Length: 305
Image 1 (cartoon, rainbow, N blue to C red):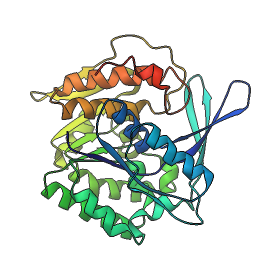
Image 2: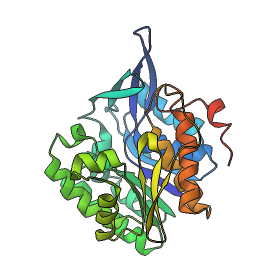
Image 3: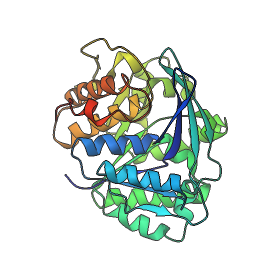
Image 4: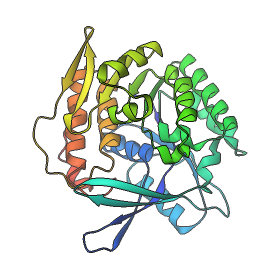
């Protein structure tokens, strides 16, 4: 399997425990996916920018500890990463962010941006999300868009997870729709969540999402349906892939991120879309039984390759 480059932002995570105290971890949607891909044995590199503070060092140490290549995690002197806080109620999570000054937002406008673009052009697969897209200025998006186009020309696959978070777009749904409409046509594999598509495009059902992805020219779509699993298209028909067993829900953080990792790993290893979606359901089912974005290694070690 050729190198997978996951692009985005990793932050400091504070997750409230039942006793009211907070556990300190690190996380971020594309970072979470990179970790779960690495645990499955994929060669994955994470691309972002952090500061030179102890918390940024913790992000880099976490990547290394998970066998995620950190060569493309740039260190910017005098800066600090973003922070987010998770509150959970009945397993569902709410997020609160402090990230406006994080260096990850300037990734493609830094002095080393040319080095990053050159690395993207050599990738086998590039993974981004709607959160990734929400980070950058117009100039940064232009650089990323051109890099994705050239990478695809060189044979790379581009995979995009919707992960629409209104706060990341400063609640400007029009700008979000315009940006998604620009980048979805770059995707070889689309991994939208129906909740996101419904919130952003008013989709009434999975048919609306698949029809829009077809208009964007996306060859393969797997629509994540939260607790209902996923929907894939087989021989022109939409087929639900439901979880095999009921799950005792603890925390849904990174459920979609882990699903994306398992789905992508399976597809890159030649499994069918239906088998890949079932693979995604199983890994997400493990992750949501644990608090925080990154489940213990002992938990995912039970997940067969």
